[in-house]
Image (cartoon, rainbow, N blue to C red; front, side):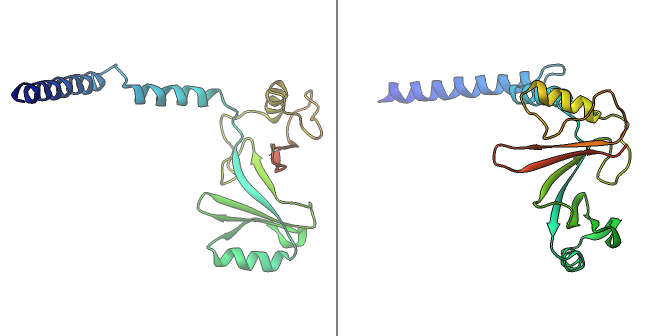
Length: 172
C-alpha cells in the first residue's frame, strides 16, 4: 500500500514538473505556445482572405416610415439615404441596417468593399472585380458578372447554400 502511494506521489510530481517546464517554454520570447501558434496561423490566413468591407443587412420593408420608427426605438439612428428615394441606412454603433421599400423582394446580406461601417474609404481593400475572380476560382458564380475590364463602382449578387442572397456592392 505504501509503495502504491509513493508511485502516485512520484507520478504527480513528474506531471507537475513536466507541466511547469512546458509553461515556462511557452512563455519564452520568440517561442509560441501551440494556442498562440494556431492564433498566429489564423491571422496569417485571414490576411489572404477577401476584404469585403462594411457589412450590413438590407431589409425589404413594407412601410419605410414605420420601420424607421421601430429601429429608432432599438437605438438606431438615421445614417444615410432618404425616405423620398425609398431607402434609409440606420446605424447603432458598428451595426448597420438598410431599410429598402419596393427595391427588392427579400432581405439581403450586404458587403461594401472599400468602405468601413462609417462609409469612410478604406486604404486597403479588394476591388470587387478581384473578389469576383477569386470567388469564381472557388466555384462561386455571381448571378450577373461584372466586366473585369472596368473600374469604379459595381456590384453583384451570389446565393449561399441556404438560399440567402449576398450583395457585394462597391461604391467607389
